[in-house]
Amino acid sequence: MKRDFLSLLDCSRDELQAILDLAAELKAALKAGREQPLLRGKAMAMIFEKPSLRTHVTFELGMFQLGGYPIYLTPNDIQLGHRETVADAARNLERFVDLIMARTFAHETLEELARCAQKPVINGLSDLLHPCQVLADCFTLFERGVNLRSMRVAFIGDGNNMAHSWMNAAARFGFELVIACPSGYQPSPLIFDRAHAAGGRITITGDVMEAAQGVDVLYTDTWASMGQEAEADERRAAFLGYQINGDVLRRASADAVVMHCLPAHRGEEITDEVMDGPQSIVFDQAENRLHAQKAVMVWLMRQVA
Ligand code: CP
Ligand code: NVA
Image (cartoon, rainbow, N blue to C red):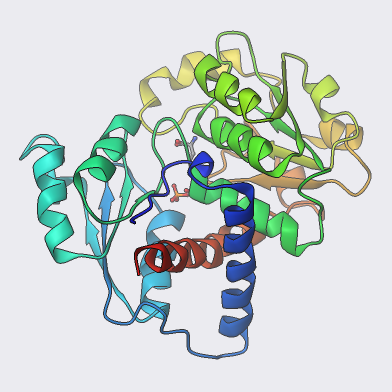
């Protein structure tokens, strides 16, 4: 039966661990120069309603390295829901390709694609969730030997798609997550309730220093996500102080790592000093998008086979 990857909650803990193990194998094979044509002859449509650097490059390159063929579709090309319905686009694409990856505004667009296409759909970011990023982030910690069950993570900033996927990861892997955000910008209560019901140990606070106290991982993201450009000034005022800087870093555990999904807005949610400092692993995260997503693609195709 086909499976989709719209949320980390679509997979069990064991399945996510299997994907992380596969990512480690694929990464080692690539570094050793061994070919990995696991998706030879397969094709993937990549639909983008929003801009991208990392997601576009790593999915396209990942499919190429696996021997498959990626097809990049800009918002202008298919105009999902405008030129034709999402359902009709899905019913066409499923006849052509083996996988569909989409970056959308509304999460419902992804859900409709997944409902209407008989092929696996991967969430390359929606307004609600960014599971591929947090999977790559967990892979980055896993390969450093961090224990995903017992670590403590602080997410500083907006209760957005990244915060939501971290909440889902906490539910699946078992670690403790503290989210520090200003009032009015808390995560969705629905996502919180679901993650909590699934076993997530999650606290939400307004206090950055309290959140950072003794944690193993400090994480942040932009104050204004794609689609919120018009709110940027208002958000800049609301988020003042929700920044990972030297003072916040000193609150964390001495060997804490600093993470950011990127793109970063230096001087806003993170300072240069921290982002370019020895505890920052932001570019390892970016690299690992490639390996983690290759594992997702291979794993999804194995469920179909
Ligand atoms: N982190 C991330 O998804 O980056 P892009 O928006 O550049 O794809
Ligand atoms: N929250 C950000 C993440 C970018 C990778 C956004 O949605 O724009």
